[in-house]
Image (cartoon, one colour):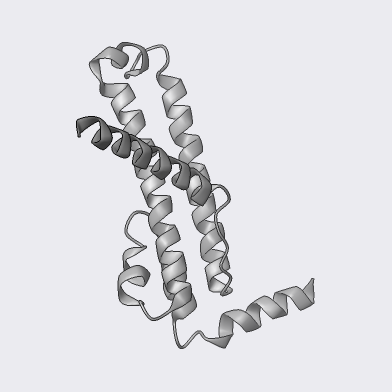
Length: 147
């Protein structure tokens, strides 16, 4: 165990003056952290990887928040999920679980970035690829239908 700790410490301190690990870890600061490594550290592969992943995590959490907000405030669903309605605790629970998962994944990924590891958040790329494939299929289907 002590050897593993020393190994992690040596990797952390190895390039601390370059700031690449710290810049990569900044990518996981909620909502805007991805901007710094993604836009200002273009030459660093580690920063680019973590900047893109931080952006993806933020897109997912904002999308979940937006969907829950629409469900709670849209007139057809607000009578079930709105404030002081019977299913409001369900949407609040979903939001709380999503937020805890987001913060946990961000903390784990930031720790991995500090040790110069390219750790991918499990299922993140798979889910986003499926969503993008569905969007592409739908747009190509609609463009073929319009022609």
